Image (tube, rainbow, N blue to C red; front, side, top):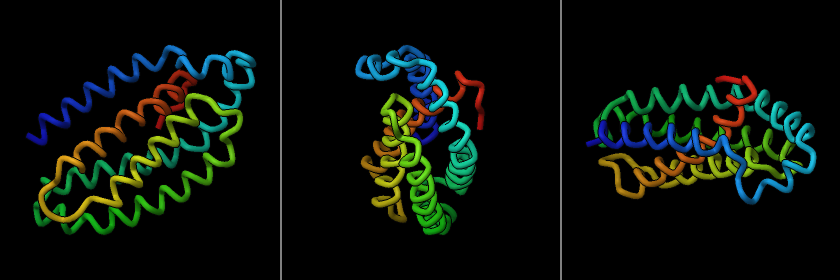
Amino acid sequence: MVVAILLAVAALVLAIVSLVSQPAAGSASTESANPQASTAANRALCQAIAPLMKENDDRSNAFLAAGEPGSPERDTALPKFVSDTQDWVRRTQKVLDAQANPPRFITRSLQRYIDDMQLFVASVRPGPGTQYDEAAWTDSIVAYGGPLSTCQALGIQW
């Protein structure tokens, strides 16, 4: 069941990434008013968050590889995952706050992702996962598509 959920989430992320390559309805006025400034601001933010996003990807993948939800291995890995993610949230929020102006799609979607990760680790507990845990994790992956697609379009990978 977990594998099916992960595959569905991966498919959802790919679909979201292809959709977000089009400008968001609410962001057109800010980003189209001065596209060169937005591109420069996006590039600077992408360069600043790339190492943080890679770090978060590596930590999340290691946590998922620790075992199935509720397994002794996953339960043992959970406290470190939670504390490391909380630290990541603090550091990434500082980077975003320093580069959040002008407001634009990447800043809004990155804020969503930071918030989603913070919400996930605030509620996840040892033992079998809950529907809330799965929903929070899935929502974070959807939000992740914003920074990922924006940065990839600028040639910045992590």
